[in-house]
Image (tube, rainbow, N blue to C red):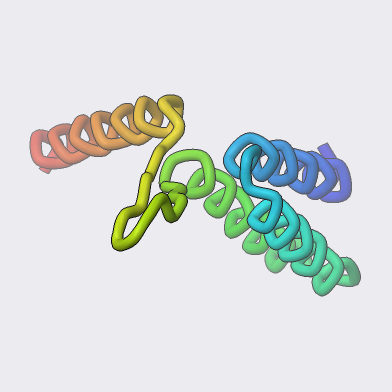
Length: 111
């Protein structure tokens, strides 16, 4: 698959994730849309395959962080904040942690 196709795929994935994560927050939706578009626009003339791969890795990492680490909150009164995290985020975060532990165990066994 060409770099152009992979980059477009990542661009679309980031926007879909943005829409899921910030679905009830118009300001965050707009800010994330602007940031994603800005980053891709700033790097649209990149031709180095190594740099493109590096940028795609960063984009993939950002997408994973958005899916697994965003906690949203709303001010509900004086000195109170209601927070929530998508259940899918919690499950993915737990799976990721379990995978990390499994990898560490195998690393210890393997020497």
